[in-house]
Length: 220
Image (tube, rainbow, N blue to C red; front, side, top):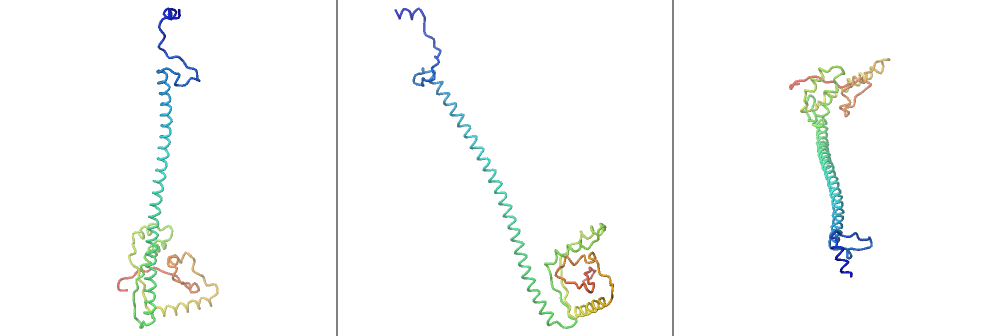
């Protein structure tokens, strides 16, 4: 009787039946098992893709940070190299200056009247270059532009014991004369434009002493 009733109802449908949630893949038909496995694979691939993308982003950030760090390290190394080179040059200049000053003191101690010597002062080249522009008054742009074209290549100190002794005596006489003169005007600060560029030169303010630039020739 059951076989006859089944024949009257016709063949069963090929569409998969919807399984209740509590049914697992073992209870599903072959078609549904493939669909469930495909869904699981899709979700697994999606999760793997998200993890991969996150990992790539982290790698890119780490690479960018490393590149920035390398750039900073390179700049730091370059700055350190510049400072080290300047320090070595300064130390060499100090040693050279100390030796030159010692030689000059010995020469001055044994110098004969009228004898003159020249001592190179390479550490004053940059100061002399800045002094050329520093002595130009404001508003004299044409003179300033001309001064910018000048390049100091060498600085020498003239050592003449007899001439220096005579100058010191005259400076002392001038200072004493100004002290006895009440209300004597003093040089203004702007008249001492060169002195800040050569702080090692001590000026006698009581004698209104100041530094001046003047032209010379090779012979003089």
